[in-house]
Amino acid sequence: MIAVAITSGEPKAHFPLTLELTSPKMPKRSWVKISQVRTLSVLRLSKRIGRASSEEIAQVIEGLNEIVGA
View 1 (cartoon, rainbow, N blue to C red):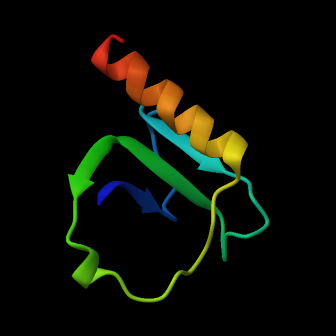
View 2: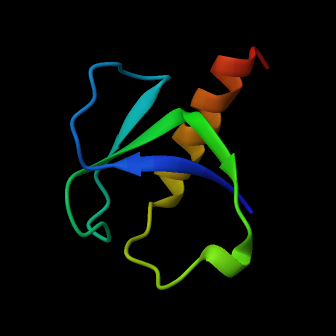
View 3: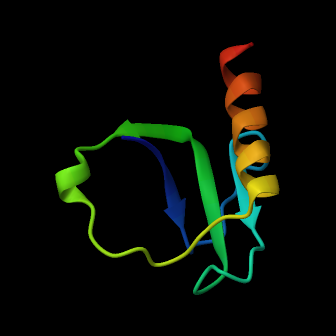
């Protein structure tokens, strides 16, 4: 699985490096650290604690494209 880091600490950097998640399905105020891409084993995943909206996911992809120059 490919993942990006999510934090509840307000970041100093802004888009395209971070994106605030405003989806009501997130348990608290959160930011995606778009520049922190990781690969994870699905065996390390446990319960889902929140969900980004499809619009937010599109913005994350846009940020990734900006960072890699696509």
